[in-house]
Image 1 (cartoon, rainbow, N blue to C red):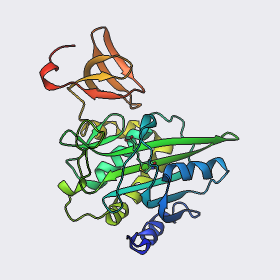
Image 2 (cartoon, rainbow, N blue to C red):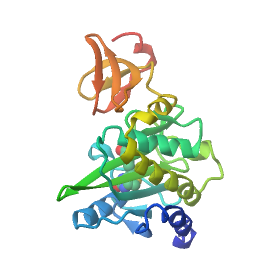
Image 3 (tube, rainbow, N blue to C red):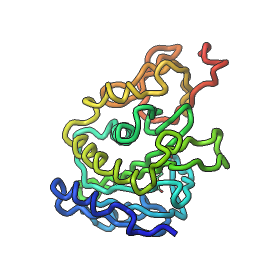
Length: 258
Ligand code: BTN
């Protein structure tokens, strides 16, 4: 049993309160999904910036309607809800991944658009959703990080875990480390967009220089990301900017062919 007291709620709140005076931090022992809960609240009109962390999710959600599996203590699962009005939303999820990676370890890579990778295995994922009401948008950013190894059940590749890089890091300490810079990144993104982050993203880009397949049937060499966060792909017919798709890396033996 994990005690809610152990979560660093006050320390996080104290760092964010000067920027967002109505910011709240909430810890729940169990919830279906922190993203689902903050989206329900946003749709009901709640606009206060908030962070919700749960020891356990019973119906964690991943991108593209997938399930997100997590174990209490072995995973960190939290979501942040903010009213946000950037001029351009492009690259938001890349900015989130970059913030997490930079808060955690220099060896964490980023797989476009927003997976955290270590040694070609997934370490964490991000689910960005938004609710719009009366011309205002509330963004909900959900983060799932594997703290300790978890089973490969139902996955193509066994996931990576932060314990491989940071053996003493608990889920609680991880939240304290990543949440304040992430909220600051979201506020900076609202003002400046993705462009100032492009070079830092590219320095961790695990796809650059590799042959990839996209879920919409494109095949090509990943060239990097553009100023709005699009994946630049050299295909047989020219350079394509991929804005939204699932991307998988080609196995090495077939990397030399389109
Ligand atoms: C993905 O890689 O497919 C995204 C995974 C996002 C998982 C996190 S865990 C906290 C938040 N609540 C959810 O139900 N999903 C996100």
